Length: 269
Image 1 (cartoon, rainbow, N blue to C red):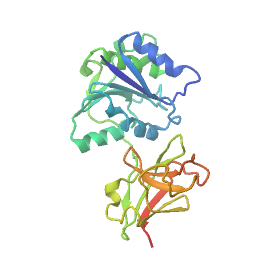
Image 2: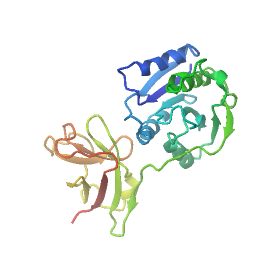
Image 3: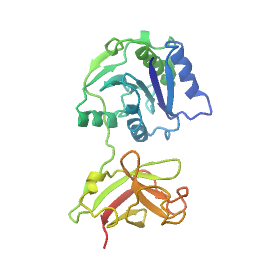
Image 4: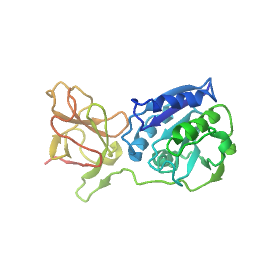
């Protein structure tokens, strides 16, 4: 059984997301297709990095992940396929795999890349504005059907990467980061990991500052009974990052964070 995931910024109103399924089934009719997300903010390659890196590696080894967040569609940007560890990726070479490649480096996984320059693995009529349907989905289907990565194009070793997110420790011991992603509940996922603030007196001896709000201490889960609805709380998200949430509510009533807003964790008092 072969698995394919799809991540795009297409939305679901026009049917562009669904037609990718059709393009795949025409080549690999037994593939199992999962839509990771078709609601990436339009042209937001950074957001695609976060969603894919936090989802893709939960799938079985050999899964093919097709990513189409492609503001350069139809230009000379390079279409690519890659193996990262035991997973395959098909995407424009525009930085969309940066987070996955950083993970591979940290884990010691091997990688390989090919430039998708062999049209026999695309649909017959390739448009300039829908490479997701005409190029990326068919290549993903061929991979899932057993075509070796090396046959899909010419090897290269310089995939494009882009600046993403991180955290910085300061002389006073405070740690600053930024908002990576706002989820559908309005929660702000921030670029600070537990080990980056392990030197601070967690959980009660810290303050988290975001959008001018100051949150005293951290809690272990949503709905902590000590806090009223819509009170700001800080905790660890399932992705491993710091998360700021409005307790038992939906974000946006107390603060309205956006990606790239700064966040600071410091010692109380």
